Image (cartoon, rainbow, N blue to C red; front, side, top):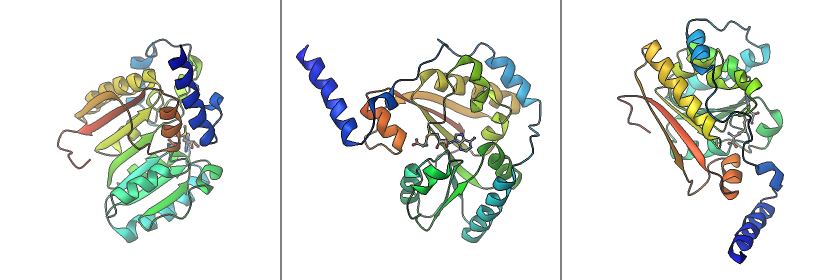
Length: 247
Ligand SMILES: C[S@@+](CC[C@H](N)C(=O)[O-])C[C@H]1O[C@@H](n2cnc3c(N)ncnc32)[C@H](O)[C@@H]1O
Protein backbone atom coordinates (compact mmCIF):
# COMPACT_ATOMS: atom_id res chain seq x y z
CA UNK A 1 0.00 0.00 0.00
CA UNK A 2 2.74 2.43 1.01
CA UNK A 3 4.72 1.48 -2.11
CA UNK A 4 1.74 2.24 -4.32
CA UNK A 5 1.21 5.62 -2.65
CA UNK A 6 4.87 6.57 -2.90
CA UNK A 7 5.16 5.66 -6.58
CA UNK A 8 2.03 7.69 -7.38
CA UNK A 9 3.61 10.55 -5.48
CA UNK A 10 6.82 10.23 -7.50
CA UNK A 11 4.91 10.47 -10.79
CA UNK A 12 2.99 13.49 -9.49
CA UNK A 13 6.19 15.19 -8.38
CA UNK A 14 7.91 14.68 -11.72
CA UNK A 15 4.83 15.99 -13.56
CA UNK A 16 4.87 19.05 -11.31
CA UNK A 17 8.56 19.57 -12.05
CA UNK A 18 7.71 19.57 -15.76
CA UNK A 19 4.78 21.98 -15.26
CA UNK A 20 2.31 19.37 -16.47
CA UNK A 21 -1.22 18.98 -15.14
CA UNK A 22 -2.13 15.39 -14.35
CA UNK A 23 -5.34 15.79 -16.38
CA UNK A 24 -3.19 16.41 -19.50
CA UNK A 25 -1.71 12.94 -19.39
CA UNK A 26 -4.77 10.75 -19.01
CA UNK A 27 -4.61 7.58 -21.05
CA UNK A 28 -6.62 7.69 -24.28
CA UNK A 29 -10.28 6.98 -23.56
CA UNK A 30 -12.35 5.59 -26.40
CA UNK A 31 -15.71 3.95 -26.99
CA UNK A 32 -13.84 1.52 -29.27
CA UNK A 33 -12.47 -1.63 -27.65
CA UNK A 34 -10.65 -2.82 -30.77
CA UNK A 35 -9.86 -1.78 -34.34
CA UNK A 36 -12.62 0.13 -36.12
CA UNK A 37 -15.17 -2.19 -37.71
CA UNK A 38 -15.11 -0.28 -41.02
CA UNK A 39 -11.31 -0.25 -41.33
CA UNK A 40 -11.02 -2.66 -44.25
CA UNK A 41 -13.87 -1.05 -46.19
CA UNK A 42 -12.44 2.47 -45.75
CA UNK A 43 -8.85 1.57 -46.61
CA UNK A 44 -9.92 -0.33 -49.73
CA UNK A 45 -12.17 2.53 -50.80
CA UNK A 46 -9.46 5.16 -50.38
CA UNK A 47 -6.78 3.32 -52.33
CA UNK A 48 -9.11 3.41 -55.32
CA UNK A 49 -9.92 7.11 -55.11
CA UNK A 50 -7.91 10.30 -55.51
CA UNK A 51 -8.07 12.85 -52.70
CA UNK A 52 -9.02 16.03 -54.47
CA UNK A 53 -9.55 18.67 -51.77
CA UNK A 54 -7.96 21.92 -53.03
CA UNK A 55 -4.57 22.74 -51.52
CA UNK A 56 -4.80 25.57 -48.95
CA UNK A 57 -3.07 28.74 -50.12
CA UNK A 58 -0.95 29.09 -46.98
CA UNK A 59 0.33 25.54 -47.36
CA UNK A 60 1.14 26.05 -51.04
CA UNK A 61 3.18 29.15 -50.16
CA UNK A 62 4.93 27.43 -47.27
CA UNK A 63 5.74 24.49 -49.53
CA UNK A 64 7.34 26.75 -52.12
CA UNK A 65 9.71 28.12 -49.45
CA UNK A 66 10.49 24.62 -48.21
CA UNK A 67 11.15 23.55 -51.81
CA UNK A 68 13.83 26.23 -52.14
CA UNK A 69 15.47 25.10 -48.91
CA UNK A 70 15.40 21.46 -50.04
CA UNK A 71 16.85 22.38 -53.44
CA UNK A 72 19.63 24.46 -51.88
CA UNK A 73 20.69 21.66 -49.54
CA UNK A 74 20.41 19.01 -52.23
CA UNK A 75 20.38 15.98 -49.91
CA UNK A 76 17.89 13.39 -48.65
CA UNK A 77 15.09 14.51 -46.37
CA UNK A 78 13.60 13.54 -43.04
CA UNK A 79 10.02 14.71 -42.64
CA UNK A 80 8.79 15.27 -39.08
CA UNK A 81 5.02 15.50 -39.51
CA UNK A 82 3.09 17.15 -36.67
CA UNK A 83 6.38 18.17 -35.07
CA UNK A 84 4.68 20.36 -32.43
CA UNK A 85 7.33 22.30 -30.54
CA UNK A 86 10.07 20.72 -32.66
CA UNK A 87 11.87 18.63 -30.06
CA UNK A 88 11.95 15.54 -32.28
CA UNK A 89 13.02 17.70 -35.22
CA UNK A 90 16.04 18.85 -33.24
CA UNK A 91 16.86 15.29 -32.16
CA UNK A 92 16.71 14.11 -35.77
CA UNK A 93 18.77 17.08 -36.97
CA UNK A 94 21.56 16.28 -34.51
CA UNK A 95 21.47 12.57 -35.32
CA UNK A 96 21.55 13.14 -39.08
CA UNK A 97 23.52 16.37 -39.74
CA UNK A 98 23.94 15.48 -43.42
CA UNK A 99 20.23 15.23 -44.08
CA UNK A 100 17.63 17.96 -44.45
CA UNK A 101 15.00 17.90 -41.72
CA UNK A 102 11.60 19.46 -42.38
CA UNK A 103 9.33 19.84 -39.35
CA UNK A 104 5.70 20.53 -40.23
CA UNK A 105 2.87 21.56 -37.94
CA UNK A 106 -0.32 23.54 -38.36
CA UNK A 107 0.01 25.24 -34.98
CA UNK A 108 1.81 28.55 -35.05
CA UNK A 109 1.83 28.62 -31.25
CA UNK A 110 3.61 25.27 -30.97
CA UNK A 111 6.09 26.11 -33.74
CA UNK A 112 6.89 29.44 -32.08
CA UNK A 113 8.27 27.46 -29.14
CA UNK A 114 10.72 25.53 -31.29
CA UNK A 115 13.64 27.94 -30.85
CA UNK A 116 16.43 28.63 -33.32
CA UNK A 117 16.57 25.85 -35.95
CA UNK A 118 19.85 24.03 -36.66
CA UNK A 119 21.23 24.78 -40.11
CA UNK A 120 19.83 21.56 -41.61
CA UNK A 121 16.30 22.27 -40.25
CA UNK A 122 13.33 24.15 -41.60
CA UNK A 123 10.06 24.50 -39.72
CA UNK A 124 6.94 24.89 -41.80
CA UNK A 125 3.48 25.92 -40.71
CA UNK A 126 1.21 23.92 -42.98
CA UNK A 127 -1.67 21.52 -43.29
CA UNK A 128 -0.26 18.01 -43.54
CA UNK A 129 -3.08 16.71 -45.73
CA UNK A 130 -1.92 19.21 -48.37
CA UNK A 131 1.81 19.27 -47.67
CA UNK A 132 2.10 15.50 -48.12
CA UNK A 133 0.42 15.65 -51.55
CA UNK A 134 2.75 18.44 -52.67
CA UNK A 135 5.84 16.59 -51.43
CA UNK A 136 4.81 13.42 -53.25
CA UNK A 137 4.02 15.31 -56.43
CA UNK A 138 7.44 16.96 -56.25
CA UNK A 139 9.07 13.52 -55.71
CA UNK A 140 10.96 14.73 -52.63
CA UNK A 141 13.67 12.23 -51.60
CA UNK A 142 12.21 11.58 -48.14
CA UNK A 143 14.21 8.82 -46.43
CA UNK A 144 12.43 8.80 -43.11
CA UNK A 145 8.95 9.95 -42.22
CA UNK A 146 8.42 10.60 -38.50
CA UNK A 147 4.79 10.61 -37.45
CA UNK A 148 5.11 10.97 -33.72
CA UNK A 149 1.95 11.05 -31.63
CA UNK A 150 -0.64 12.26 -34.15
CA UNK A 151 -3.96 13.35 -32.66
CA UNK A 152 -5.75 10.05 -31.99
CA UNK A 153 -9.37 11.15 -32.55
CA UNK A 154 -10.45 8.38 -30.15
CA UNK A 155 -14.25 8.69 -30.50
CA UNK A 156 -15.51 6.05 -32.92
CA UNK A 157 -17.57 8.72 -34.67
CA UNK A 158 -14.40 10.74 -35.37
CA UNK A 159 -12.38 7.81 -36.69
CA UNK A 160 -12.41 9.21 -40.22
CA UNK A 161 -10.02 11.93 -39.03
CA UNK A 162 -7.33 9.38 -38.16
CA UNK A 163 -4.73 9.48 -40.94
CA UNK A 164 -5.03 5.75 -41.72
CA UNK A 165 -8.85 5.96 -42.13
CA UNK A 166 -8.69 9.04 -44.32
CA UNK A 167 -8.33 9.37 -48.14
CA UNK A 168 -4.81 10.76 -47.54
CA UNK A 169 -3.50 7.37 -46.38
CA UNK A 170 -2.22 6.08 -49.77
CA UNK A 171 -0.25 9.36 -50.14
CA UNK A 172 1.15 9.06 -46.62
CA UNK A 173 2.33 5.48 -47.23
CA UNK A 174 3.94 6.38 -50.57
CA UNK A 175 6.00 9.29 -49.23
CA UNK A 176 9.01 7.46 -47.81
CA UNK A 177 10.66 4.03 -47.73
CA UNK A 178 10.59 4.22 -43.92
CA UNK A 179 7.67 5.57 -41.88
CA UNK A 180 7.61 5.46 -38.11
CA UNK A 181 4.38 6.09 -36.23
CA UNK A 182 4.46 6.55 -32.46
CA UNK A 183 1.35 6.61 -30.27
CA UNK A 184 0.23 6.07 -26.70
CA UNK A 185 -2.97 4.32 -27.86
CA UNK A 186 -2.56 0.67 -28.78
CA UNK A 187 -5.74 0.61 -30.89
CA UNK A 188 -4.33 3.42 -33.05
CA UNK A 189 -1.10 1.45 -33.54
CA UNK A 190 -3.03 -1.72 -34.34
CA UNK A 191 -5.32 0.05 -36.80
CA UNK A 192 -2.37 1.83 -38.46
CA UNK A 193 -0.47 -1.42 -38.96
CA UNK A 194 -3.59 -3.24 -40.26
CA UNK A 195 -4.34 -0.39 -42.67
CA UNK A 196 -0.70 -0.28 -43.81
CA UNK A 197 -0.60 -4.06 -44.44
CA UNK A 198 -3.78 -3.94 -46.46
CA UNK A 199 -2.90 -0.83 -48.48
CA UNK A 200 0.71 -1.91 -49.03
CA UNK A 201 -0.40 -5.21 -50.51
CA UNK A 202 -3.09 -3.67 -52.73
CA UNK A 203 -0.80 -0.81 -53.85
CA UNK A 204 2.15 -3.15 -54.53
CA UNK A 205 4.42 -1.23 -52.13
CA UNK A 206 5.84 -4.42 -50.56
CA UNK A 207 6.32 -2.85 -47.13
CA UNK A 208 7.31 -4.83 -44.10
CA UNK A 209 5.29 -3.69 -41.13
CA UNK A 210 6.03 -4.20 -37.46
CA UNK A 211 4.26 -3.00 -34.35
CA UNK A 212 5.73 -3.12 -30.86
CA UNK A 213 5.73 -1.30 -27.57
CA UNK A 214 8.79 0.52 -26.29
CA UNK A 215 10.11 2.56 -23.40
CA UNK A 216 12.16 5.59 -24.37
CA UNK A 217 15.45 5.96 -22.48
CA UNK A 218 15.52 9.64 -23.43
CA UNK A 219 12.12 10.94 -24.61
CA UNK A 220 12.39 12.51 -28.04
CA UNK A 221 9.20 14.60 -28.10
CA UNK A 222 7.26 16.71 -25.63
CA UNK A 223 4.29 14.32 -25.69
CA UNK A 224 6.54 11.27 -25.41
CA UNK A 225 8.01 12.72 -22.24
CA UNK A 226 4.57 13.38 -20.73
CA UNK A 227 3.26 9.92 -21.53
CA UNK A 228 6.42 8.15 -20.39
CA UNK A 229 6.48 10.05 -17.08
CA UNK A 230 2.82 9.14 -16.54
CA UNK A 231 3.77 5.46 -16.93
CA UNK A 232 1.82 4.92 -20.15
CA UNK A 233 2.72 2.18 -22.63
CA UNK A 234 4.05 3.63 -25.88
CA UNK A 235 3.73 2.00 -29.29
CA UNK A 236 5.69 2.14 -32.54
CA UNK A 237 4.63 1.02 -35.98
CA UNK A 238 7.41 0.85 -38.54
CA UNK A 239 6.55 0.52 -42.22
CA UNK A 240 9.58 0.03 -44.45
CA UNK A 241 10.49 -1.25 -47.84
CA UNK A 242 12.42 -4.51 -47.61
CA UNK A 243 15.85 -3.15 -48.59
CA UNK A 244 15.81 -0.08 -46.31
CA UNK A 245 18.52 -0.33 -43.70
CA UNK A 246 19.45 3.32 -43.07
CA UNK A 247 17.36 3.82 -39.92
C1 LIG B 1 -0.33 15.30 -30.09
S1 LIG B 1 0.61 16.55 -30.83
C2 LIG B 1 2.22 15.79 -30.99
C3 LIG B 1 3.31 16.80 -31.22
C4 LIG B 1 4.73 16.23 -31.25
N1 LIG B 1 4.89 15.30 -32.36
C5 LIG B 1 5.07 15.57 -29.95
O1 LIG B 1 5.09 14.34 -29.91
O2 LIG B 1 5.32 16.29 -28.99
C6 LIG B 1 0.02 16.49 -32.52
C7 LIG B 1 0.55 17.63 -33.36
O3 LIG B 1 0.11 17.46 -34.70
C8 LIG B 1 -0.31 18.71 -35.21
N2 LIG B 1 -1.33 18.40 -36.25
C9 LIG B 1 -2.42 17.64 -36.10
N3 LIG B 1 -3.11 17.55 -37.27
C10 LIG B 1 -2.40 18.28 -38.17
C11 LIG B 1 -2.59 18.58 -39.56
N4 LIG B 1 -3.63 18.09 -40.22
N5 LIG B 1 -1.67 19.35 -40.17
C12 LIG B 1 -0.60 19.85 -39.48
N6 LIG B 1 -0.38 19.59 -38.18
C13 LIG B 1 -1.25 18.82 -37.53
C14 LIG B 1 -0.89 19.45 -34.02
O4 LIG B 1 -0.88 20.87 -34.20
C15 LIG B 1 0.05 19.00 -32.90
O5 LIG B 1 1.14 19.85 -32.74
